[in-house]
Amino acid sequence: MFKLMEENELATGRNPPTTVYLVTYAEPDSGDPNRLSERGRSHMSELLKSRVMSDVKHVYSGTAKVMLHSAGIISRHFNSQVSVIDCLNDINLGKTQEEELWVRVWSDFTFSPHGGESMNNFIDRIVGCTIKIIRKHSYDNIVLMTSPLASAAIYHFVTGIEFNPEIWLEIGIPSCACYDFTITQWELVMPPDNTFLTEHIFMQDLLSEQLVDKLRKIEHF
Figure 1 (cartoon, rainbow, N blue to C red):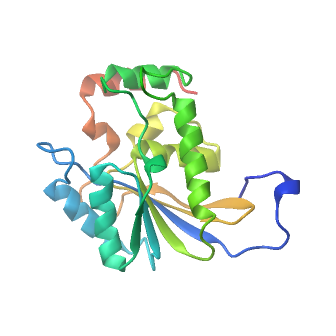
Figure 2: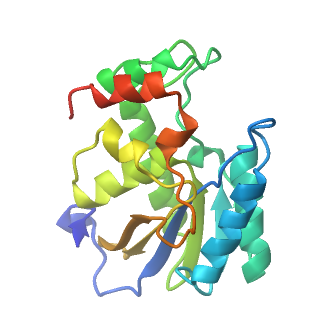
Figure 3: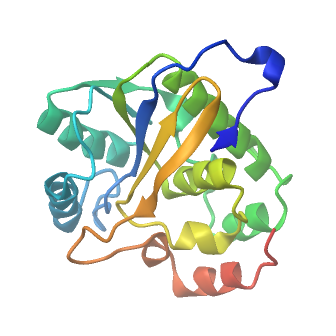
């Protein structure tokens, strides 16, 4: 388990945990990245059939269309409400969205692209957003639908594992991680996983080979 707050900030007693399923969006369509591919929709079906998630009461999603489509599949399966919240969005690389910017933000966590945000700011946003959402629930099972980078950031935050491009590149599309959260602590139940899929896709498969090679050469943090 992992401390979240100082002792003087903790409430007395032990609250029941909130189970958080942190799910990454499924594969976007190559012709229209705002939609899920046929394989992506099939993978979401496999995720639900795997029963790694149960009794989901609420689904939270970033605003990206692939997140919303993926979240909608889960919400319909569990007949649960979807709330759209922009703080679950992927890192903002600005208007240009050039692949080379990924190298720069991974090489220097303080670098902010023009009109975008730094890796440090992204991590702070995702962690703060996640905690804010979870505190609205007690003894619930909820889904946070977000990006592979956000999944890697939360995994790093909870476990203290080294945060580097390799972790991000190996996050599954889609994948599911599971955490238990109380007012005082996090507990990792299941790391980001996609072994439930018959065909595995990872973040690196959505990027060019040249970019993946450059990212793998970056010094780990």
